[in-house]
Length: 258
Image (cartoon, rainbow, N blue to C red; front, top):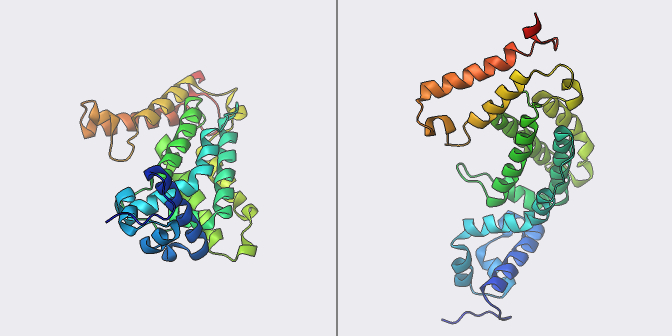
């Protein structure tokens, strides 16, 4: 059966038109109004065409999330790092919150309808960008915790805070309400560069950097993948963690000088 595409065009044109109409429907009717039949009708194609391009409804939802999230990701990809990685993390937090409040339907599709074991491509890319920012801070010795732990803490706090605001009436969604949370979380996982310049130990810096590298990411463990046992991998990470504590007392002095 020929495709009843009222406006012609190739697969790329059809795909973009379907996504554009799906984003409009999402904003107007929310996720519940985003049926494949409604999207196909709005885009002027038959439903089989939609399935040919996106495989199934989950594929369509992922593509819609990425398509709607593209302006945010483009801004994050073009993010110009400053000399202060911690300040860059604050800027990144603010960009994330502003996008969520300005695009509630897309944000809810991305983060409000979580399927265990599944992460939309746009969310995965956003996580990779955040992790890259944290890796940079870690190399400079500005992380108090491993990169993966900092990634989870920032992800959980940003998305949770935005979803909390989106549950309020539109008039009550003020970004400044969650600004203290931003500062609390970032202060807990990072250190200001200026506070570390005089008393930073190179042992701590190197141990923290190596700990970030050997910390498992998802199902991958770089240490066991290199041939070490699970016990050896755990012992290595424990020793690196202890090094960061032994050489960084609470008063900021260096134990090696005692």
